[in-house]
Image (tube, rainbow, N blue to C red; front, side):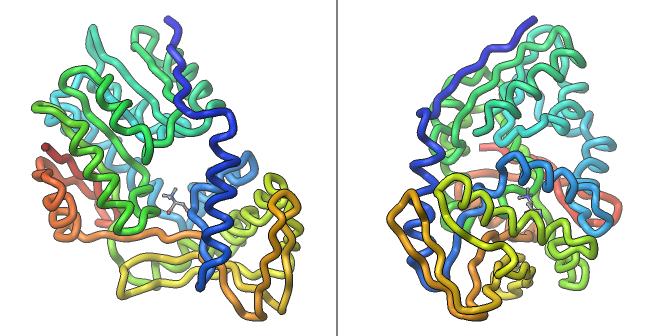
Length: 321
Ligand code: AVJ
């Protein structure tokens, strides 16, 4: 079997969106950029390396839950169609699909990266030759309604890895509402969310001893150089990870070591940084069960299952409209 590939994004989607985010985020005080721009080829490779670091527990913890509880989750969902938002390499889907497999099982991978989608689809078809695979290149904050409308009955929409934490509370509300609107009776939503824990454990997960997360953070400047003709010197910035206890999220920041000015060749834009000024490059929110029940409850979801790893670091939760 082959897979079907659908592209919902315009050719220049990423450039346009990046320009807008840079114009808005670097004019603001404090400066910030959304984390989705980390993932060029180098950034994706560095993220893969992060997932293997001793300090970075989320990937391992989530995999431990999936390995132990995938059948329970699949059984509870009763799904025949798995739709994964931000599917990446589809490693997690591979585990989740085993107990979902039947005559008519369908897997829809949704991601912004065509290469990741094609790689994942091809790999999955090797593992599960009978599976029906659809790969959709789309921005799940923008095309969710369309993607979910085309789904079959009894679908399970999965949003794993803790990526929900990258959204601001406002973006989260909009995203969850859109998922909720896309679900019918009998459908369900599986969410992977990292849990609140001590800063002593959280901060090293985002500022590891080997400096891989620092390299990942600083690579964002290279992305801006490559894509927008900027002239950032990464050596002029320092990576920081800060726990914001009030918001319950980790912030990654790049701090200017000196006063400096950056030119964006493609944008007719210059941006000044004062010595010590920080650019926030990511929030990674951590959750409690109560907070998830409250936030999802507000969008009309009811909880139908809760699983954590043995150390209680990470959660998978199942929700019904
Ligand atoms: C891929 C969004 C889940 O927030 O933990 C890892 C990204 N950033 N180290 C996270 C990330 C720094 C990661 N997510």
